Structure formats: C-alpha cells, structure tokens
Amino acid sequence: MTVHGCTGPQVDLDGIRLIGRTVSEVDAEVIQYIEDRDLGWLIYGDGGPGPEELNMYVRATRAGDTVASGARFFAQDWEDHG
Image (tube, rainbow, N blue to C red; front, side, top):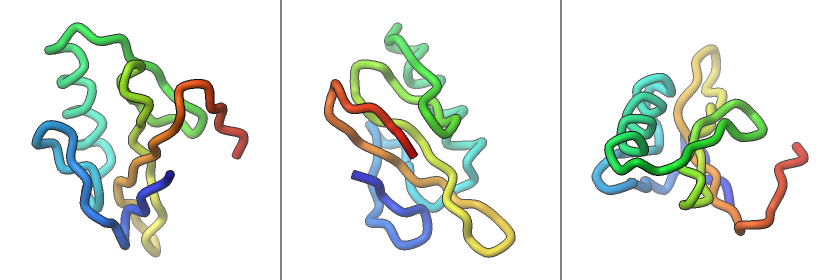
C-alpha cells in the first residue's frame, strides 16, 4: 500500500511523521530510528530507506516542482517492480 505524500492520510512511525514532509528530513529521522534500535535497514526500489523488519520505506512524491515524503508498506516477500 502506498500513502501519497500530498493527500495522505498521515501516518507515523513511533512519533516520526512520515507523510507530507521534506524527504531528506524524514529519511534522516527514519535512519536514526533504525540505528537507535539496532535494526537492519535497506534502500528499497525507488531509493527510499526503511527498517528491514517493518516492511516499509519512505518515498518521494512529486508535488508540482517539489517533492513531499510518502511511504510504502508491503508484505514480507513482496518485490517492488515499478
């Protein structure tokens, strides 16, 4: 499931607001979250980081000439082909 960065709904990860923010800020907070908890992390299909165990990652959503953070959630064995 993909949560669009401009239309939401708002989703958070232990207090980290994931949707509609500057992508680099969300990336940094998610990476810090992962490192603080000694979790594994991956860079997924379209370049977004995410905790390996939670099956989610941060995405960039075009918003005119800028981008906003979105998120993708998926089943454990799912592969992103597009």
